Length: 262
Image (cartoon, rainbow, N blue to C red; front, side, top):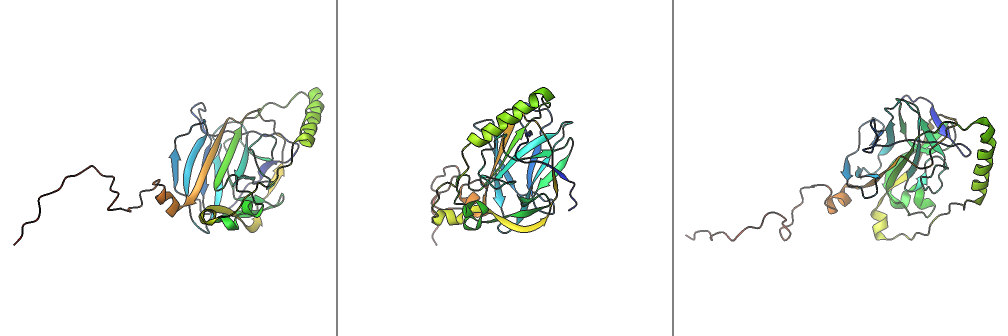
């Protein structure tokens, strides 16, 4: 697939982006797609905290990409985390504005397909068992099986006279912020059956550094919880055609007359 260059904000930049809410007249769309552009099956759910939430049917071994479309006339920035790890620097993510972010141009569509290795390449995402996942390699099960996107709007750049003060404040905040460490995690049988995202093959995927000033808080956040089909069936999120003769949820019936005996 031909890719245009991706705007990328690494440490020291501020970024911003947006996702669909009722308050956004032209919402940003987020889809999980394969290399051929086909979408994975997604099941929206009600949100309790203004975030957009959905379930996704993962396919073991399949490569995937986070495709984002910006139908607005403004640049936006995207903090993207997979299994709780920022996809640019691989560190544990809080979806905060101070983290590395991608910048998406006005009217643009881009697909984010892997863990960034450098400005020229990524290691591809693929669905795998949790024990083989990138996050599990760091002992981090704090956001298992979740693709998360935080969206920020862009603020105008500050006047030049104030830019040095902002840079100094940013530097102080970076020095005082605690380092993101791996959270304790012990694998069990349930964890082994969970879906995760692996650190796949290296491929060319170029990006450039840009400057972008973000609003303080994200416009919205989007969380996609992915699981294997059998898990979604067990949770009754998919109608998999499975029937249980001792657990029929149909309308209560009554005993019919006995069949006639000859």
